Amino acid sequence: MKALLPRTERGRLTALYGSLLLLAGGGLVALVYVLVGQGLYASVSGVVRTVSPAYRLPVPGETADLGRKPEPARTMAPGESPTPEELKGYAFTQDLSGAVTDATRHRLLMYSLLALAVFAVLSIWLAWWMAGRVLRPVGVITETARRLSGENLDQRISLDAPPGELKELADTFDAMLGRMEHLVSAQRRFAANAAHELRTPLAVQRAAAEIGLAGEPSPQKVARIRERLIGVAESSEHLVESLLLLAVSQEGLEPGATGPVDLAALAAAELAADPPHALTVVRTLAPLTVTGDRALLGHLVRNLLTNAVRHNREGGRIVVETSADGELAVSNTGPVIDPADVPRLLEPFRRRAERQHTAGEGAGLGLSIVAAIARAHGASLVAEANAEPEGGLKVRVRFPLPEGQCTVTGAPGSKIG
Image 1 (cartoon, one colour):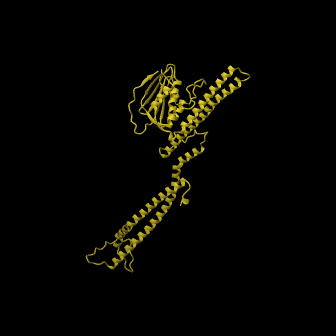
Image 2 (cartoon, rainbow, N blue to C red):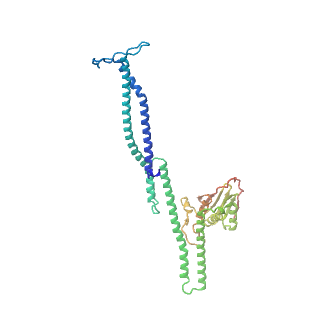
Image 3 (cartoon, helix red, strand yellow):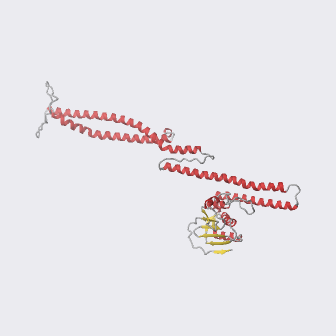
């Protein structure tokens, strides 16, 4: 049965549409033939009877005068029998009505079958054309997908068609191509930036070894070069650990590594372990328990606090808040940031200013790691630039609350310096 079906979608649609149209046309022809046939004999018989019985049949040897007006039919009295001539007239009327009815039915059947054959040819052609029109957007999508590669993801279908399912499919495909182009571009930038970030400390180490230790350096110079090499190695180690953490965060959570985590207690512990100096810390920590990986959530809080301290100004302020509705927010003062630059700060190796390769300078992965950990936990992250004159950035992470957890009123905030 499957071997008899057409091999293309257009052929299948043509067979389907053509069969439906042919079935509808055949049904219409049959219906007309039956309806006309049922009333045809009565109509013909009635017409013939109004004319034929009114004529007097010619007797043998008499010439019939067809131009003569018909004589009115004789009205028989009750109980009177028709004459033999009248019986012959009635029989003639019945035979004539039957012959005319049969001839008309035969002619109607022939014309109907001829019309059905023409309709069948037109139906198949119309079904083929209609299937081509319907599947044209699918062909455009297929051709565009066939031309796509990693080098031309900027191509789009841009289907010019009225609103409908296929138009929605083409627009969805274009949106998917846009996301793919963005992801591929981000991956390329990430690879290039990672290579650059890893190449820089290697170049510094090689220069220190080839130039600083050339000849017979003094013990003091060897000590300085050693300290320099250790610092570069630590920076490289931190960069590699950050890259691994980013990769782990993007893979998602392991099923057995999740559990309830108190973010308020986690934030308080991070602040107590490494309190910011020369900065005012305002914390409003309402109880907030979420389900997740405690180690990754610790990195999330730590990176937010480190970013808030590193990009602050002297005598600035850090605000740390948790709320019972599932939100963790960290805000700081600092340089004024253009709101248009905020989305770029969440990408790997993106900084507000060019890297200076100075001590304590980050690798530009902190906020991207925060975003990856938030996505792994099903949380939404929103970063906003603070208005002048405070400047700085406010990052809010909203976590989905566990089922059955109610919103409670948080404890009043406290201020530590």
